[in-house]
Each structure stands twice: as C-alpha cells, then as structure tokens.
Length: 139
Length: 425
Image (cartoon, each protein chain N blue to C red):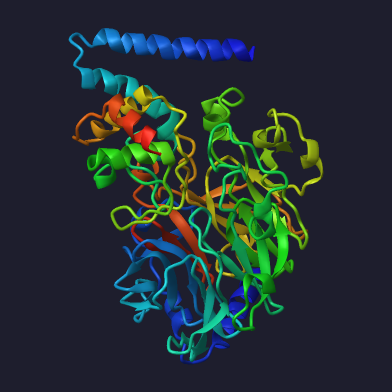
C-alpha cells in the first residue's frame, strides 16, 4: 500500500515536472532551472521558510531582503551544503538550526537556489551546478 | 442575594487595599474600546488596548499597583523589559519606560521581588513601594548554557520558596544530526541530562548554577507556558510537540498527517514525571504516546512509550502554546475561576496547509485539578484575516498572559508588542 502511495507521489512529481517543462515554450536556462527548483523548494525548504519565503519570526530566517540570498553565491551554496546555526540576519536572531542538505545533487542545489534567488521578489543571478560542484569539492 | 454578598465582599476586598492604590475605584469606570482592539471575545467581555506596541513582546507580569512589565525578545533602546503605567485609570498606558538591559522571556512577581530571565540566567529586583529597584539586581541562577533552539527560560514561582525554570531541548527529536533526514535518534538521549525538563531552584538563593537545581520533571521537548496552580499546589506546563514528521519520514507521514501530529500537550508536572520526549510523541487520535520514527516507531507502536506520563488534555498539533495562566480573580463569571487560559502563539509547521492557533483558549477546571470540559476559544482575531498561510501574515500573535489585582487579564503580542487588557462588564 505504502509503495502505491510512494509510486503515485513520484508519478505526480514527475508529471508535474514534465508539465512545467512543456509549458515553457522557449525555455531559457534559468527559468527552467527555477521551475525544477520550485519542486525542490516545496519538498525541503517550504516547511520552515514558508510558501512566501518570509520564514518564521524568531525561528526560521527569511529568504527575502537578505544579503545571504542576494549576495555572495558561494556563501549561499555553503548554507545548503553545511547548514547554518546561531546567525544574526538583518539584526534578528533565529533559534532553529538549518540542517545540512548535502544529500541534494549539484543540479538540485543549483535549481533550488536559482529558484529562491528569482522568487518572492528576489532578483539575483542564477547559480550553476558547476559552482555547487566546486564548492562541494572544497570541504 | 448572592450578588449582594458578592458585591459586598468585593467591596470589602477593594477597601482592604492601601489607600494609595486607587485602581479598583477606577477599574469600575473602565470602558472597553469600541472594536476591542481588533480581537473577538465572548459576550460580556471587552478589551482595552493598553499599548499599540512595546516591541517584540514575550511574557508579562502585572504588579499589585497595576504596573505592567513586558519582557522583550529584542532590545528596545537598550532595554529588555518595558514598564507600562496607567496613571489616569482609563486602562490605557500613558507612561512607558525601559528596565534592565537583557532580553528574555520569563517574568514573575513574588516573594517581594520581580524575577526576570534571560536565556542564560535568572535575576530579581526587590520591590520597594510596589516598584522594582533597578539599582539592586540579584542573580539567582547564572551561567546557563546559551543555545538557540528552545533556549528561552520560562519561569514560575510556587508558594514554598521555589523557582521553576524550563530547560528546553536544543533539538527536535534528539537525532544524531538535528532535523536531518535519515539521522537516527540517540539512545539514550544525552540531552536529557541537562535539558528537556523543568528544574527547581531555591527562589531566594543567589548565584545558583544549573547543577544546584533539581530536575523536577523530564521528557519534554519544550515548555514555554509554565504556571504554578495555587489552588492545587501543583505545577502545570504546555508541551510543544515535535516538528517535521513528513519532511523527515515522508514514507510514513503525509503532509496532512504531519500537520495534525503530534498533540500539543497540557501537562500536570508532578515531581518526577517523565513525558517521554524524545522517544515518544502524543497522538490525540489514538490517545496514546507513540514511539518516534527516529527510535524505530511506525506510527502505531508504543514500545517504551506505554508507561510514560500522559497529558491531561491534548490539543491539535503545532499551535505553539506559549503562555499558561490559571485565573484566580473574581471579576470574570464563576466558571472561569481556577480555569486555565492558554495563548496559542500560532503554527508554522502545518505548511503548506493553512496554519492554526493564533488565539487564546480557556479550559475549565474541576476541583481535581483536571479539565472539567473541552477548551473554548476565548479571544481570537489577533492575526487579522480569516486564513493564515504563514506566520508573517499575522498582524499579531498572542504570546503572554497576566492577571491584575482587579481580575482583569492582560495579553501580549509578539509581532509589535500590542498589549490588551480584557475586562468583564
């Protein structure tokens, strides 16, 4: 029974991914990346950072109006790879620890970060799987 | 006749106050704001906005004189507590002053002192003529380990000279790697040695360390709403249940199950109790403590959780009960006497489903010290709007509760620090 649920969930994810692909007529690389990034965001990031990326006051940091997202892309990649804890952001402190998400592939990390950097009103450049790969090799 | 006796005894009570305290006379003249400050209350109740915003408010205490002390989670003009005074008796604060230079959650007035906690200490100030003397702080508990997750120190005083302090667990479920998919729960959980419980200290002894305290109860993840029940002579607390069942175990829990599990538990904290965290969570649908998946649980197996102490009431998941107060006043109708008020600060871990909580509940209590009926929504509408998708949609979130000498109750908000005074007319 559980397998059926898992399977149907998988099918759902896959089919929505395919549908999103199909709706992009002339897929620019970054747009396509962001679409696949949205699915990863909803699975791994949304529970804490919320649907609109504003986080939870005192607990989970916002992903909007912050240099952590808009600034240095290598530092941002490191947050995904290594997690983050006890860091003040825009003068506010947040109690919950962000766990490492190094189980995501280079492509998945690039996709989700590109999505975050282009969503919720954010306007920052895309992140490539090569950047993630280089950063992962450093640790 | 009953009313007459009640009025007479109330009048006697009022007259027994020192002449300097004119609050009771003025209290009769109190008028609720036309819109009750944006919140909805049961018939006969009204609310006055004491302050539109003192900062990022946490817990609150009200002195005999009616002065209001609000703790902050972020310094405001270098101060960590705000004192509000209503000098003309209309219920609204007309004086606001900072006090103390440290932020934190806990605050209580007792033993002739004002007690306040930071995340690493508990201090107190002697009350002189009803006002705490800021120049004479005493450190009661000191040198506590600082940590972010569940690091706030709620406190309560009993009537036997004890101070109770929550030491929340710096963890979700004691995994080897916190909140990390695939990471196992540590067995036994080493966090429980020094955290995940409530410790009892001497309320009058200076410079106690964590080790000088006594682990009064264990097996909790976090308790923010902590209160001494004078009538029962017992401590009670509100457990924050674990997060992220579906994120960490998608094969066992779907988004809906994860939004509805586990219970937020109302706990009677009898000395020596063990409520089972991190091995167990409470499932209100099965009315059982269930083994956590980090410890081999499969949504049904109880295992070692069978013998753990149960809640006296179970609430829906993730509502974040951040304040607990037993009502001992005479202003409200009789059914409220000795019952419990609870601030549900409001959820975040129900996303992507709509959030829950964001209201103040009332739980009627029987003489046996247990709920005598289901909970009721007492005050709601804090967040504004009908559906809260994410916490930042909320205009206000109820965070702290206090009762004043005349039996009014005060509610703080953590977003802007709005303070309401609820009266019965």
